[in-house]
Image 1 (cartoon, rainbow, N blue to C red):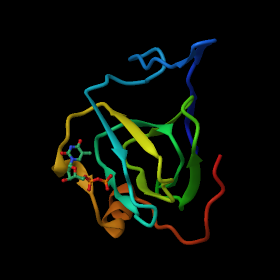
Image 2 (image 1 turned 90 degrees about the vertical axis):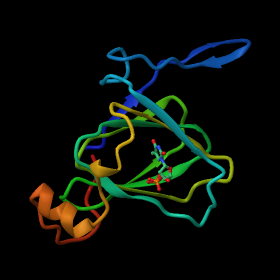
Image 3 (image 1 turned 180 degrees about the horizontal axis):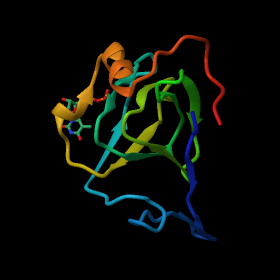
Length: 142
Ligand code: TYD
């Protein structure tokens, strides 16, 4: 699957760094919700779901986390460890997150309010809804 990273412009000077996230300028959707994960235990797997109608942008403000992403064509691993890189998580992509560093702060911008009914938490149901049947090893990530 195509991995969509967004390079975020850093405004740096001798005081430090600043990054702004703005609808349509560097975030390709209307931002309706922001949440962040922190103090995640290092042996924890989170996510393990897809969304039917939700687009998100993930940024590690601090630390590092590994994403497993799958659009139905097979799993693909992405390490997110740079506050100037956004990872686009489009609708109907299965995602899992693991290998959180102790200091990781993972911020997520979303184009919809929280809606438990939007979640697909069963991988077989996800494959059924997305219309693919995965058979193979870790896919090449582009
Ligand atoms: P959960 O969906 O388990 O997180 P993850 O998929 O990252 O493992 O969410 C944990 C709890 O937080 C759960 O009780 C639902 C709640 N929650 C909200 O209230 N609002 C939100 O925007 C999100 C993402 C979760």
